Image (cartoon, rainbow, N blue to C red; front, side, top):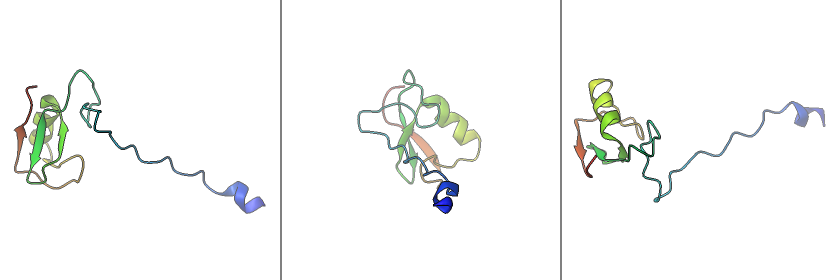
Length: 77
């Protein structure tokens, strides 16, 4: 009916990074692969450039938004 026509469109499904996707979750640049993890939450999700920018800014993990004490390099940048 008319009510269905006025309903908001369905929200797109959330994007979930696959295990094969190694791009930074912030800049999404495949040339800047994930190299750093946040402490204490442990999310391994950003490149060196974005890790530095986040730690100079709000220090919040982009995945869970928990304040980070530091970032650790896991892989060579």
